[in-house]
Image (cartoon, rainbow, N blue to C red):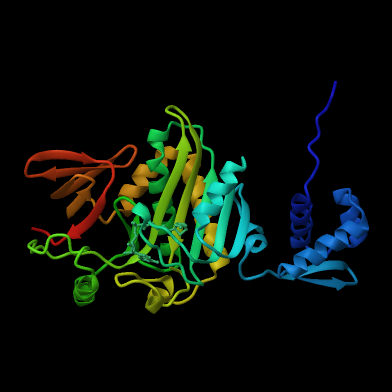
Length: 347
Ligand code: BT5
């Protein structure tokens, strides 16, 4: 019988060294024996980890891990309870583009992070401001599903962002389909009005529409891209942009950040939680819609929906698989699969 044995990559060994050190001090000799590599190789991996920002002391008991870097690929991978490899770029055009290139190279289950994006994209090629301090992340995976179900992953990402933001103390909720907003109170109406005053004429859509926009500032957005055939997805990239440790001044009008709402948080833990929650949801798709409905700021609201060829005003009644919004309008029930949604003051 031939046994095929996949050899361990450098990265796998580095991860194994780190994992061992997280349990306490280990001598170079023990690590070498446990991982079936030479002592020189262990030393090289320890040096590489130090270069990546891990504080590893050489004590009498052996190597001891005493500090983890604030952010970066190794930092986020360390202790991540989800099966993803993490890549990190200090500065890149768009993490979605990096992830798409990785997909073209046949890779999967990778999270691409960037400190800063110079060409961050929203839907319909809109600009996405991505200054240093935010969480700009793209998750690449290959679900064994038909392309028509992919919008469900966008909803899952919005749920994951909302849960993570709430755990950080931000009162977040979801505006259909993919915006995470901070919930507003009546007191916030002045701020909203000023937000609206900042919107461009184009953004105002209908100047003659006298209904007030009633929605909180935007904390995060999601851009899902995919490639596939009629009955099977080849790859999906879910891009998540969350304004975390960012000054509101560095963002467009109408945006907010975790810093502005509750102060700075540990980005490493934030991304880990985000990716773990997304992984939980993609592994249990049946939970996505109920969680989305629970977190929705749109359901029950009067909304204006702008689709490719129509503008609809009505009450958002429900969201149906795989993410269509059911709208009650004066002309009856309409199901909308894609478009821009604005929350209006109740009629
Ligand atoms: C989105 O588009 O909300 C999707 C944003 C996805 C960004 C992530 S970051 C990681 C990955 N790499 C990328 O290149 N993209 C993804 P949309 O719904 O079209 O909203 C875009 C609009 O939001 C813009 O036209 C601005 O009005 C506003 N906006 C731009 N930057 C913002 C920011 N940082 N925070 C809040 N609003 C912003």
